[in-house]
Image 1 (cartoon, rainbow, N blue to C red):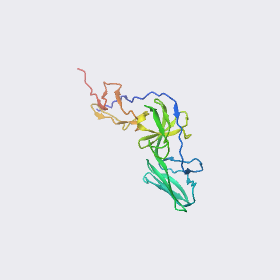
Image 2 (tube, rainbow, N blue to C red):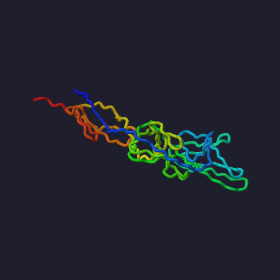
Image 3 (cartoon, rainbow, N blue to C red):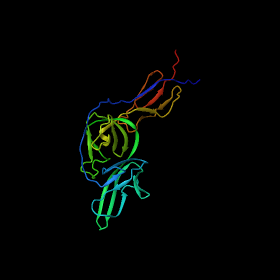
Image 4 (cartoon, rainbow, N blue to C red):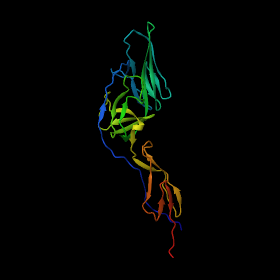
Length: 260
């Protein structure tokens, strides 16, 4: 008669300790002609979630009268320009970066161009991230978007804890824990992934196992989120007389031995 074994299998992952440090803010300046929505603040950067779209695009020309103008995307697989009722918007399609270029021609034949750096991010649940080194916070998902005198808008010290809320290529979009705002008066910004250790929140076992005596299986488990820094799993059994497991997740149930 087959016997079904009941046992407790513990799988653990090491989590880093959390320390909170201060955040310093830089100042930056630059001149831009592109605006978004009702804001009168000129923009050189715009972050957009996949599947969403920006506020209405507009611009200001201080020299001459506009004969014609047009917006274009240099990465249409990631974002595109959508026109509705004579108004232009940026539509985020998939994770990626690039430029929206505004081209203007005046009635006297002068031509102008201005660029807006676009970061289309993939949203995620909020996860705790810890800076493993002092790092710069950027306005977009690039260390040099080449649209402002200073693409950086602040920095975080080693040990600073933040919320990781989105991903964009080699960058995380982070939000400060305490609401501290950067130079652009926002509590969010982009930081290179290599400077953030993302804490694991849970372990997911892919299958539920019912085992018989003498069975051998390899456990299937994964750390969440899938971009957590430490994905090393540690396996252990609470009763090695019934089941053993090695550090590769190979599990073996023990056979019954009849007494002499």
